[in-house]
Length: 163
View (cartoon, rainbow, N blue to C red):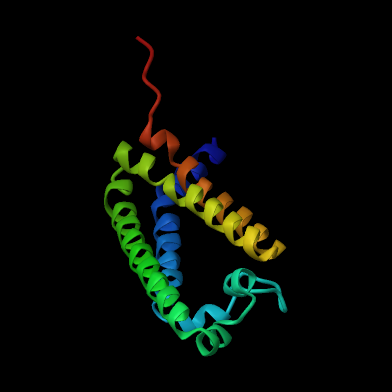
């Protein structure tokens, strides 16, 4: 009985987990506004290549000095990606703070974009860099975001009483 009560307690705050993850997404997406930060690989083991290095064979600073026009194009693409990521993060934060918190079913379904998006993005970075740390982070973040979705499941979808 106590376990069921604690699960309900944890489930009550699932929206906070999603909100924090969306806030983290906001910060990581905002990094794309400064393309020079692409030389930092936050999820790579020391010495591993960044995604830019894996694709071009150059660091961001080397790319800027060797091919300024391509770097400018790639930089504008990164800024576009940052704009999209920040927009998605703000949307996710608002949904988790409002409709998910109020247990609206549509918000539960929309919130599945968090674990699916994390997994897809991290697998893409792994494919580019080969950094196993990315896989560890993907597993951890996906697991925690799934907890945020599954713990309050019965609050979103209560059992119907037998007739």
